[in-house]
Length: 467
Image 1: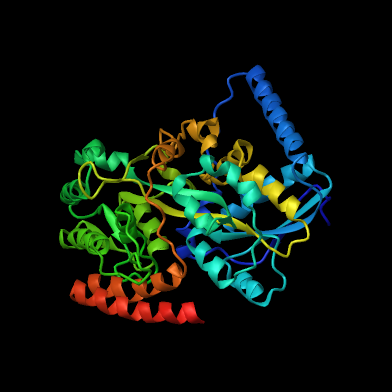
Image 2: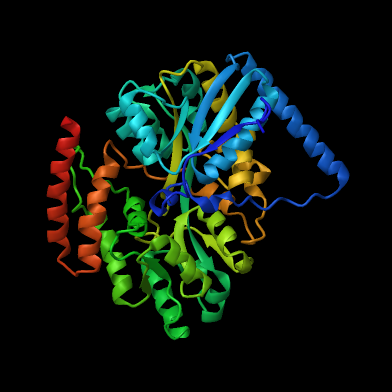
């Protein structure tokens, strides 16, 4: 039966997103709603409902004067992002009956890339991994609407690290959705049983020492770190320390540089974890990690804030046994802020309803109300900083005994600029296949491996730039 105009049309176009996309803010685990704050009494609940209603109407009235909020548009999104935006689209259409929004669920952007290449069937609003933004601007030049009139006034409200990914020169071509300030998720009960104080972990050397204690106290059963030594399924773990140092796969001249100090430092730390027997190999990093966490073989995960939803969905029986602290730094007092995932949205330059697209983006992605939907429905941590004081971000999550979102809000203002220039993903695939495994599995000389991989990636980059 067809849904009424005020309800969003949903079209499922794909299966659950693969692990590499999962780790970049499009993970299925994010679908678990955040824990709701308890209602103290009926009066409080009614007051809150009235306040939200007033906020919605005020937001609707203000935007009605700015944009023509009528027409029919299609939006593509994946997994938990899809779940949140369906809810947002339904609410938006209730406020604006002249608008019809269809949300299509996709597994990844494979179909979208074909649409952009041919110029046919391009959705009005499309979700991208933030690391692919600058590649899209270059590869599909002219395909995206200039939304500078919308975005420029919100620049001060956005997590600073994401802003360079939203612009082509001075032109805003994308709006931010979620970001993923990283933190260290850890098992409180295992730490306590082994006599490890999480507050003592300030550096990765401290982390390694804690891992040695846990390994000894559990007779080798529990490791502190798990990752894919071959890099085939993921190389997110080494990248966290790489990004923490502000590392980039490109030098200042735009040439590939895998053999940088940031890479060798990150690789050295992970090699030490392997040598000290405090790490475990996860050939299929996503599913193997969940299994290892479930059977207590693994007790920490350094990842983006979105991983809170992964734990709650997959390991509900471990509620009350997890908490979060800031990441260790490479050196004591050094930077411990890093982004580990996130996405953006772009508007097609061929849309028939540009004002409606911008109006929806402003309401859903650039307001506290929209951020509240994203957090409560899909545990998505938006890049819109004014929302971080909202109760949906600050309230205690009973699963953790604290608020991962509130911690993330403290860990996102000094994140180094995200090093995702054009063709980052293509070059990253060569790093993944030609650098990680040869070092951690084959035991080859790190400098030689990184130099050879750099040469191969540079040739590929030149080909892509001239394609």
